[in-house]
Image (cartoon, rainbow, N blue to C red; front, side, top):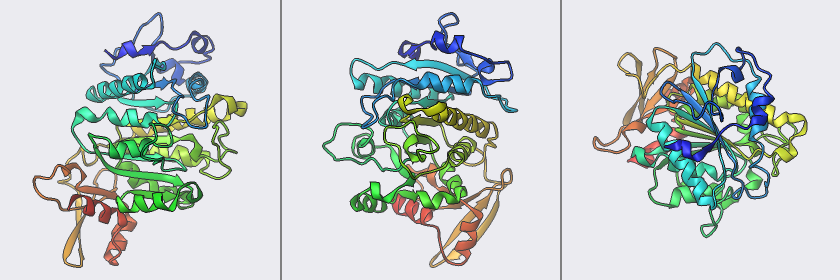
Amino acid sequence: MIQDFFTPISAEVLSDEKTSKEMLGGQLVKHTVVLGFPDLENVNLAFFDVREERGAVGNEGTGIGADEIRKQLYQLYAGNWDVSIADLGTIQPGNNIKDTYFAVQETVAFLLKNNVLPIIIGGGQDLVYANYRGYNQLDQAVNLAVASPKFSFGNVEDDLNSNSYLSKIILEQPCNLFNYANLGYQTYYNSQEEISLIESLSFEAYRVGALKNIAIVEPVMRDADIVAIDMGVVRCGEAPANGNANPNGLYGDDLCAIARYAGISDKVTSFGIYEFNKLFDVNHQTSKLISQVIWYFIEGYSLRTNDYPYGSKDSYLKYLVPFENEVISFYQSDKSQRWWMQVDIPTQSKYKRHVLVPCSYEDYLNTIEQKVPERWFNVHRKIS
């Protein structure tokens, strides 16, 4: 059982609690020495921290700060939610870093099988690889969305770390990755070869400047299975607690909006925040931001509508748009008014769950003008 991987929440956090029943700290089901590991039967969301920093390049200290996030999170007032949340405690670093990866992988796999959505607090961003490997047993292709200033390809011969984990995800078998989307990359931190590779693989990448219109993130989140946040994507004036902090990047409210979009998405089944370094956390500014990001993810989760791909599209409004030698079908949800565009695939294709591509109303209007969104072409190339 996964409880063997965990140590209880520290006495320091519990003794420092200044919470009421209206606050998250008063509503969580907690793993404590006295109460033991939580019963997950009726739990919707379960968060835990991983104190592994050996793979965090240039950011030593990422393994010691999760309790600061807990202290801030516990003191936030809960929203009007009908969501059961558990704090599973801590995965301590293993004797070997692969031991830590194994513990994370098995934990994610167990939670997914039991319909519990894991929220992971890192630790280095290399833990995204372990999170991804937790999907191995589901026998399905998955989509990964990462908010980070870098793509993290690294060199093929590099060991797995925060700068190379994406290469390991793409190259190592079994490869279950269908799509990767980067949010907030900064061009000068990525070689032209890496940018060209993103394009050749039909992946998605949005420069930090493009996210000034943060609404463009919504369809990306709606199509993601795994969402990962590298705190280096936030400008250091907003979140200084990162050894690789940057003067440019997203604002804190942008990150909260991304988290809320991720929470609302019916398809997102795991969420992680990485590269927080307590050693640089001036006035608890970054730990407060991360706690608010988690709060917004929970709020988004509470607003899920079970749209497609989990609900039936039979009652959706369907729009047909002629384009060159084919017709592209658009669907609008009768529940949320959100939009999808259809990519036709072979009947026996293993990519059936990717047949509908999330999009916006603007994408529909552009297609009428014969400007089909790049996201449609990317999926079409991958499955045709």
